[in-house]
Picture (cartoon, rainbow, N blue to C red):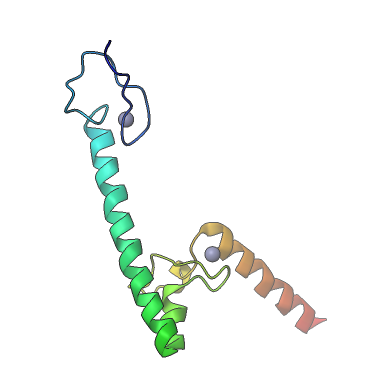
Length: 108
Ligand SMILES: [Zn+2]
Ligand SMILES: [Zn+2]
């Protein structure tokens, strides 16, 4: 009996008759898997940098590497666009709302 296999990228069941060497449904899934892997490497590199920054107490670097809202590593470290310093749109809008609330309080 042929073993049931699943796509390494999207997890869909691969059709029977696929060569045993094929691990993905199609090229889209293969490219996606490659991107995921690249991203994981990137995250690993950033994690190392962050560990070093924490070790040396380099606050500027820590700020650059982490989301000011939740403290998670962001992928925006290299760019300095201020709207990219948050890990996600959710954190960005949360920070924005807090700033707006603070401004409203100051005005009152
Ligand atoms: Zn797939
Ligand atoms: Zn965040």
